[in-house]
Image (cartoon, rainbow, N blue to C red):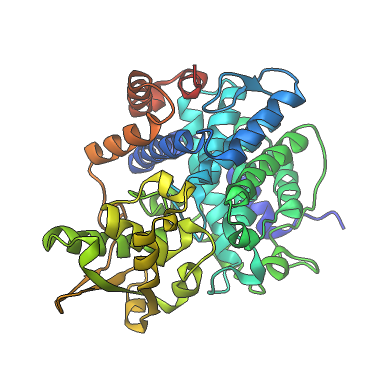
Amino acid sequence: MNVVGPYTQQMAAFAAAYRYEALPPQAVAQAKEIVLDTIGAILLGSRPDYKSVWTLGDQARADGGPAQCTVFGRDFKAPLLSAILANGTMGYAADAEGAGAARMHAGAVFVPTVLTVGEYAHASGKKLIAALALAYDVACRVSDAADPGTPYPHSFHPSAVFGHFGAAAAASHFFDLDERQWVNALGLAGINAGGLIAWVDDPTEDSRGFVIGVAAQSGTRAALLAQKGMGGPVRILDDTKYSIYDAYAGAMHLERLAKGLGTEYRILEADGYKPYPCCGDIHSGLDALLSLRQKHAIRAEEIAGITHWVKPVRHKVIDNNPLKSHNAQYILAVAATNGTIDPNDILVDRRADPAIADLYRRTQLLPEPTLSEITNNAPAIVEVRLRDGRTFKERVNYRKGSSQNPFTAEELREKFLRWATTRIPKEQARRIVALTERLEELRDVGELVGLMASR
């Protein structure tokens, strides 16, 4: 049977006709913010301390081949598919990126893809913006169609699984695929999609970012092969015998694929940016704790105990997780001691400090059903009990940096410079800010990407 499925056909037709000129100004502005913020997270994650990305970069250089694309934070170029594996892994390596949507760390997959493939294709800034917006439009709808309403169904990580579709969409836009090629690109991306959330048992955190890099690479490869005429499943988004919905969710909501096509731009749903390099589910709790710490001049040695309440559905994700970046007790113990969370707090286990280890043991995370009333964020309540008997409590419904409690433009630039200058000089970072602010005027994305190299 060679009849293209109706939903797959509709998505391919929509994607093939996608153009920058149709984007509303707010989508363009959002894309520019997402690119800037994610470049900061990428450059932070390109540090030699993040050995997964450094290993992948070394492997890309060892494999050889044409110098097509910059390996971010390094001083060399590599072939497209080698570079994008390393670059995509950087997107999530430091857990400092934002712009998530539809259960995905969307910016972590899509921004490295549009930068790397954009450089390869010598694309304009307008083309990059459209490719990024299209990645959100395609991947968010596929994720929604396969959303069973519970986190991490069947042990798959949505960012990796549905990131394949978004990466394929971004690359396919750069390659100007026709409608039939789009069907094949989506099919090829879908049959190889995957990525287990088993990385929660990897204390090195190397594999956490790797599944994101694989999604960026595999989606891009699907677009390349479709461009060269390779066929793929023609009903990948439809109700078929062996469907993505059975594989990844056990739920199927096909009507969500077509909802708002061409009128609702999913990039506008990106959920803001991270002030802290750790799991976003902990951020509201961090905001509450740091607020209490500052208001009441609390010193770590005064604290008898900390209780942190979150939504029940998020509790199991961050409760004593083996990963420091996803361990609420660890993150709050460090923040209560140092007044912040630094990238090095994830790279180095601060529980080697007996004082932090003791406070870690006296910090508990509990589920609180009433917090589920906030459906569009990850609210938290934090209570700090002092040794002198005083107790302080604070609730934060919307974490700093979220779309409901956003950064100012200046705060976003300051955050970018803080992360980016861990890898490149400040003047080079400032030039990146200037170029992203006029991204739609760039004739060649390579001008921007070249500034992401370490000299």
